[in-house]
Length: 158
Image 1 (cartoon, rainbow, N blue to C red):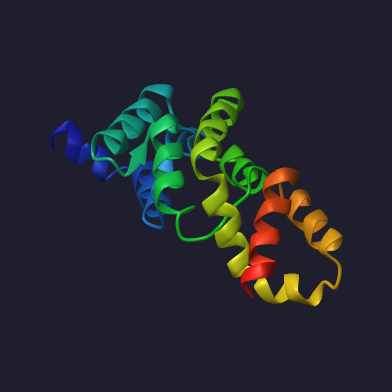
Image 2 (tube, one colour):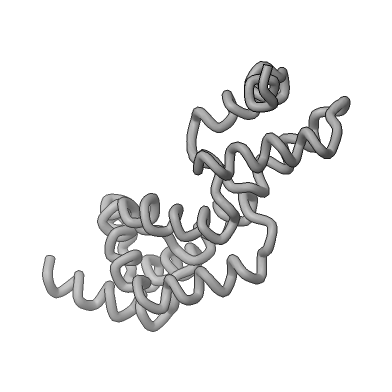
């Protein structure tokens, strides 16, 4: 058997393959999953990680963050805090994540808050006071100024 065939028949490889079959994973997630296995050599851990990185089922943390922001946050409106909590569990470098999110929100915060408001429209309409709506959105991580501006334009349009 070739080394590649040996790897594919490996118990740990199959476990990681199953774990990756649900969605694209970050390298940090795979490393953490591999740490949970007790009787695995470091060389085998590295070989498994390299294999999955090579076939792009696993992405390096920075690429994973960009992929997540481009594909998943475009469909729903997420605040900075929500994305930080979601991605913070999936990438190693929290400072780099924070910087990436700041850059992302510099360009897209307005569209993110609009999507979030659209998604939570019923809940926001049940709130009688604008201040409650503002508090709700700022607690979710949107900036106060943008929240106030966006609610003002929506109030006049509805």
